[in-house]
Image (cartoon, rainbow, N blue to C red; front, side, top):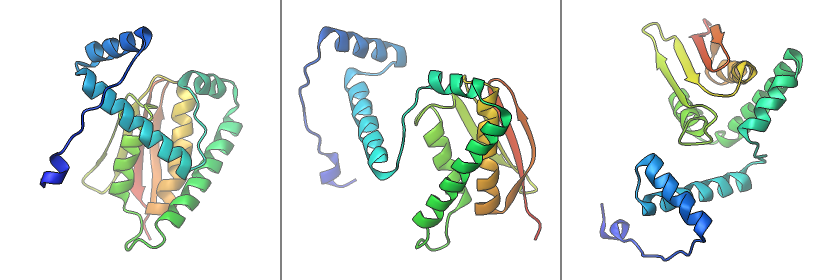
Length: 188
């Protein structure tokens, strides 16, 4: 590590009593120092702002999303998931058009885990993937939303895996708080 990257700067911040109490609650809950919580909050805020500027994003709470998913029909859920997948695929094609080798599946999956998992937007409490010996891919996760969320994620990921990486959905298991998707390479 070079000398420049080791430098840090002290900064004072004033918090009102309510903000300070929230800070103390977080430090105790996550076993972090106050400075670590503030750095993490700052980094997440910057990432979120950049994300809003780079992409057309609407922020929605889990509670509201859960309620919306609970009242829409399976047909509407599929239609919304397909529209999102189509837009996402187009965006990725454009973004990686000039990148040699295109979009790498491992990079996509790792980024998905970060973005959807506890370190990102926290849609999933846990999320992971693994490749089996025969190149089958299993994606699994747990969440606290509802079964329609599991179905929605399945509806979004299936066309993405198919079109971008030539993997098709072999089987799926969805529940109120879990999802497991098994993809296999398309035989060409």
